[in-house]
Length: 181
Image (cartoon, rainbow, N blue to C red):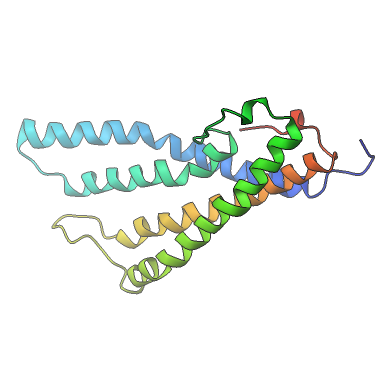
């Protein structure tokens, strides 16, 4: 191992820290999802009262739980992987496979999703789109923006992972030093 500091590892750690913090915050929304859903059900079936705004807030929270925490899940290796061969690979071979997966799949899919959803989100922002339901939330444009939050956080995590994989492949960083979460 050389005396040089690992290439851009500070940037990777900053991205990891941001995605972990945001992902953990989004994960806490699951408590709101359970409580909010229970309250909506009790109000509707127990008292005959509709709670459209709360029901929509639960939908917003649901979107944030899954799309907001996606990069944190990727960071922690919690994504789906068919690892029949992968589990037996060396650290360098795993870094190579993961680099190729990031470059050939993750980043192109994120860029396509960002490109294809840009008009959808920007049109919603241009009108400050609100709920079509009476008593609904006035922030549909914010909910639609969660798609771009997903794209940006996954692209950043992909960049962080590529930095770590490059350091593993060049021998600047042992795979054991790459922390998840």
